[in-house]
Length: 289
Image 1 (cartoon, rainbow, N blue to C red):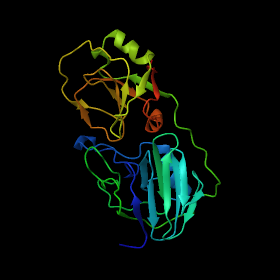
Image 2 (tube, rainbow, N blue to C red):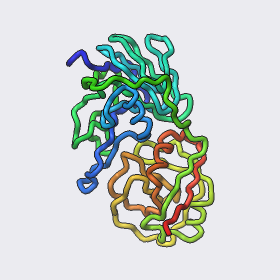
Image 3 (cartoon, rainbow, N blue to C red):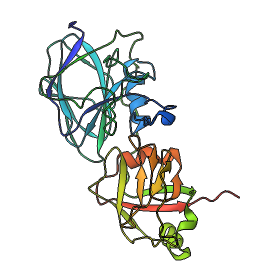
Image 4 (tube, rainbow, N blue to C red):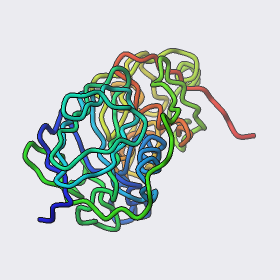
C-alpha cells in the first residue's frame, strides 16, 4: 500500500468511513447511508481543502487514534473533544498539520455523540454504488474500523482553509424536531396525535445510525391490523408495537411494516446525530396548509 495512508491505532467504539451517501437506490433496497451530521462532515472537508464528496471518518463517543504514513492536514469537528498530536494539544475545529508517523488522538466527546475527522485528500477506500460510506444495515461499503487497519488516502487538490477556529453549533440540550404528517397518521387515535406533538420524549440509549429511538408516552393506534411493508424515507417517524416513536436516520431500511405517523424536516436531523441518551425530544407540528 502507498505511504499516503492512515494506520488505525485505536478504532474506538464505532468509527466508520462516511461521505454524502448513496441516495437514489431505494428501489434496489439500498439505504442512502452517509454522514449523520452532514454540516460537520462538510466543515471538516472544507477546512482541509477537500471537495464536498470526499470521505471522512465518523467517530462515536470515544473518538479514535490514527497514525498517518505521510504528512497530512486534518480537522476534527462535530462533537467537541480533546485533540492531540504526539500528546500535545492541538486545535479542534481548525486545520492541523500532522507529520508522518505522528500519533493523532481524537479524544472522547465532551458533549454530543459523533465526531468527524477530515484528512487532506480524503479517505480513498473503494466506492460501492458511487459511495465510500459504511452502511451498518446492508453491510455495503467498508467495515467499521478495527485496530491495525490501514486506510488509503487520496491526493490533496487544494490548500487547507486559512482560519483559526470555525464556529459550530453546540450539541443539543433539547432536541426539537419539526414534523409534517406522515402517510399513516390516521392509523393513530386523535389523542395519540396530540400526545405525539405535545408531550416530551427522551433519546433512548438504544439509538444508532439506523434510527433515533425514544422513551416516553406510548402512542395508541386507531387501526390495529397488519400493515404491509411500504417505502419509508429519511426522517420518517415509525411507531413499532411498543408505541414509542423511532426517527429513521441515514442507515434506515428502505421499507417498513409499522405505520409512519410523521416525517422530520431534513434540516433538523443533524442535531439528532449529536443528541446523547436522555436528551429531551419535542416533536413540533408544522402542518402544510
